[in-house]
Length: 322
Image (cartoon, rainbow, N blue to C red; front, side, top):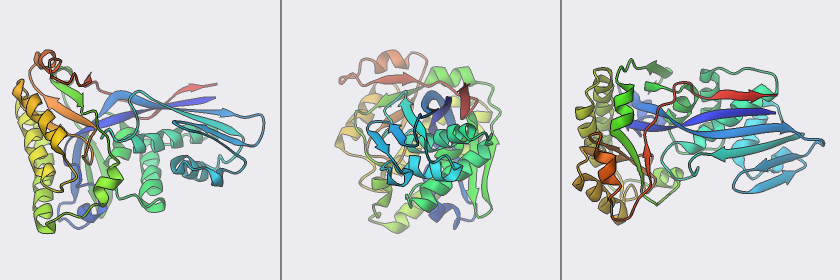
């Protein structure tokens, strides 16, 4: 039996600039500054007594041929690793794994690849896992997503991740205030979810305005890197608020009335900044404020689920082999 553990992620700034359409045409490429969370998706791979494939997630599939699997990520990860029969695969998530804005689909893909490679007797590097996950999701399955989630999940830590025509570069940031980050940043669940692919497929009403906003978001990623390395968390909190204002103007599907109302409530109790994570339409807000802010956030009228930000520094790891 093999068990992999792979972190979800929260991005501070730069989301959307990791999509090839932008990163490979913009002069400076794309950049995302993010951290890996101590909230995980676990993948369990165990040998079966027969040659069938059993996959358990929010649904249950038992097939004679892996090609007949409905779970596309499992099917393609099996193809890449060569583990195509006689296995049971189970995924378990600390946080519901769809529409949360935490990069869960890519986390699943990276975790699957890591566990299946290990099951096949191979060790895969973080770079290999991220590249293979991108290939599966973007090139094979044609999903209109970026490349930040795969690298954040594979590498872990707090990183500045750059994207361009020369590929992807992961720069671990030297951040001496990790405990303060965990104290001052909080995830607030909107209670809503929406597929990132659905949001990203929608065409903007004003392409030129979108491009202008994306360029500003790219600049904000440079600032976020600077603020993290200097531990200027106050300005970082303000910056994520500015990032949200740019992001919400890109497309009408990024936000909705319930999300805007919750944002107003979050700011009214003393947050310095808040932004919706992921493509938009639902999921979690990343919120910054003083150490006492979480107590005030607990007083929100709707009692939204709060999760203190915790940091994972290991990335996707094999936590059991037996």
